[in-house]
Length: 274
Image 1 (cartoon, rainbow, N blue to C red):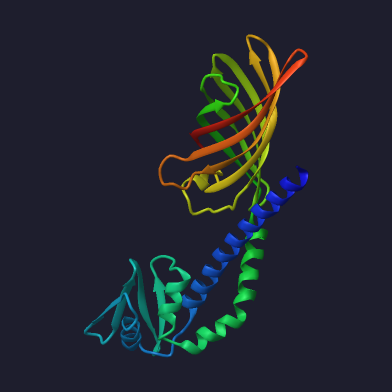
Image 2: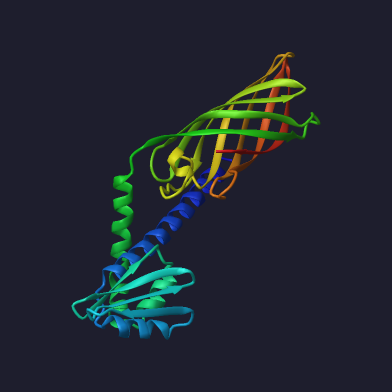
């Protein structure tokens, strides 16, 4: 069991690492693209870009002789800026790496090839910078839920309220108080660890809520009026980057004790919450 849990933790961290590397790679390519001075005038740059599939460009010439060119690729727009006979590219938003490369290739394939040799160092530096700049912070966790148990009890409905603590860009600790009503009243306290990746350019990020996380938790529970104690442990998935209502789903095993007897049940819970 311990080996399985450790393996799952390593797998999740590896997944977060891969996501972080991919994000850093896109940012490194994008940054290199917009800072590069291409050895073409803007009109020639626009013409060459337009030769790529899916690219639309247009240029306007003013009485002063200045030329301004702009274009779009898959709804991502950019402008071409004259820099003393060279061309710089400014983007309205971040372009995917494949699109950056498709635009860069006809402008200066030599410098694009040179980027390959230094890309690994740029990615490493970007990851180190993000890790060094990250400051531990608090978040919240809250929601309404419904759960079904294999012990044959009615569907339980209730709510959850607690806090999160980001320790670094991948690790989150959480603690929450949970209440369920399924004929009797159940109160549980859960503590756990979440694996996620911090991103700031999101609405929920302002509340310290990850876009998606895997949650592992454990905690005591008590049921009344027939007093019974127990323990619940499980794993869950949280998805909050849906541009609508954030959702979660969890599978858990719970052991309840009544005097000398004990029983194990498996529960599945779904809900809306952060």
